[in-house]
Length: 355
Image 1 (cartoon, helix red, strand yellow):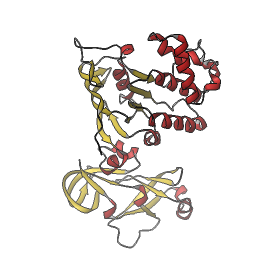
Image 2: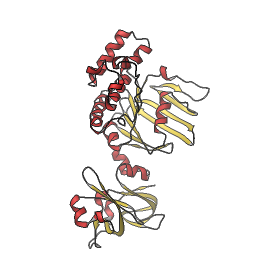
Image 3: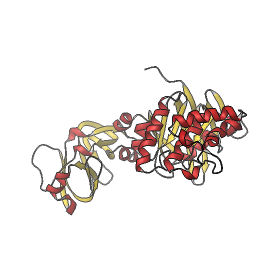
Image 4: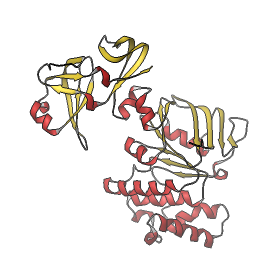
């Protein structure tokens, strides 16, 4: 694979209230990077700093090889002079302007003649399937429609960098799928870099080439979903991609956690490690099972959650774990009634990486 030419190169620190940001972020030309993390991790703040809407304390942000923020007393390119398109979560369309003029606004503010700006705006509204609404005003739109118009406005300026702050959050369930398809189509043909804040792992997988996980102001892991799943850097990452994650100290084939619980592994390791196992590999029984699984333990049923294509059963106790079962298994085992069950996991199902 030919390595991507880096369009965004950002390494900076900043403080916002009690949150201390320490960020290192690189995004290639034609690449979309999704920022995921728990609430309050600093995801939207990172976007605002890339856009120039908030200052960094130390470090640098470069766009297409040009320094746009070097920290206090150094180079700072204001937002309107950066070639950046931004789509905020609340879309921020001008309520008094028709959609055509909303999309054209960025161009006219840069000195493009109104007639040309409206021609470009008409093209983009047609491209996102909103051409018939060009004379409407924002209060006549649904949340999903407003986000599509905000996307058109951001793209009309041909930005080098596109920033999307939870672009699907304002859409209802039906409009969400349509908006996601629109975003997929536009991002595939977008020649610049895109950084998007996503709340849902499904959105990130559908829209992004890579995922960066932000926790407490720091990017703890960056990679494809397979790379994150192979060696999740934290419990949040494991939970995000649906894996069970256990951290502890390995001695040979035994991982011992802080509470004393032990897991038998299929391969030997030494030192601090993280072991992960997919919920599909966790088998449940009402009676202690016979057979070869090395990890067999009893635990209470904490929750039974219906997902799209399976049932996720959460167990408590000293070894909290999630199992994925079928609807028939829920009935056969009476899992909705709660109580204790036996869980079994083969040692070879665990994947282990240094912590």
